Length: 358
Image 1 (spheres, helix red, strand yellow):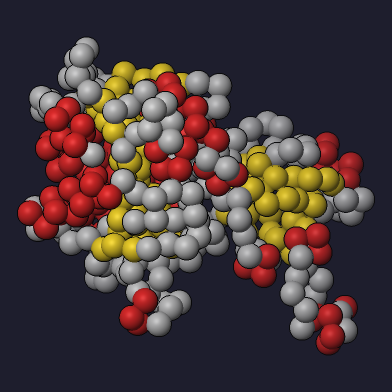
Image 2: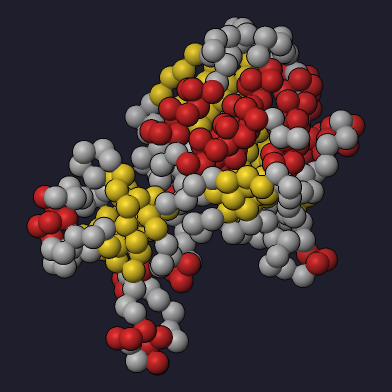
């Protein structure tokens, strides 16, 4: 059965509003659930650093990283009819965007509801209906009827963040979580769960958690956070695209309910093979189900982390999520729990000699 505290942590992280550059609510959730004796710091990019009370000077440092932002949108302009032009924050398939509810942050700091719209079929020729939509053909309707009303009554301004309007839900019968932002709020939650499980335990390593901002627009936060922490080694947690409904059976490498996925390569990183093998062998020893993948595209915070300073051994622990970069993701709590178990096992077994061997 799922740990109810874990589910509460996941729920609050998923429901938090936090597109790239506007991750404040996510950080508040992390501060709420981190161990009581943790200390925190932030930088101007809204990276959050979480330090264990048990950390001691002179020990090697492991960075536990997950990105705090989610894909979303930003108000580009307000049209004369009061609807909003917008741009994407992160990578979207345009046809997945319309006919969904969103939340728009107004000048009073309140997220107000809106709907992503496109021209109804009644006003479009058949030839136009069969074409792929572009974001320029869409707008967000908040209920205003003029630009002045949108500005003065709804208090919406250009540059305002826009978040998918989705509420987390869990189906215990089938162990399925549905929500937004699982890429990478599941990783944020996993770091908090790991820190809670390790609370009060002496380790051979200092553990520093980082919730890095702006991953979806170029891994910008992690480029800063790794240079702030200066770790000796890193574990990057990522909500990664599950492939079990989109590829041929023999190519499935990231299926729900088969454990976290450790990737050997992606577009920006070849995983340190010695560290990767250590993690895979440890998972086998601890009887933790894991998956392995070879990815030809995509990238994670592991990209800037593994080449920072003089080079840092890093692995990516992926939590499988179906349909990431849409309004709704599907994931399994069992995969989450096994990712947490693996993170705890690695933190307990790392030491300087082992790091030097990587």
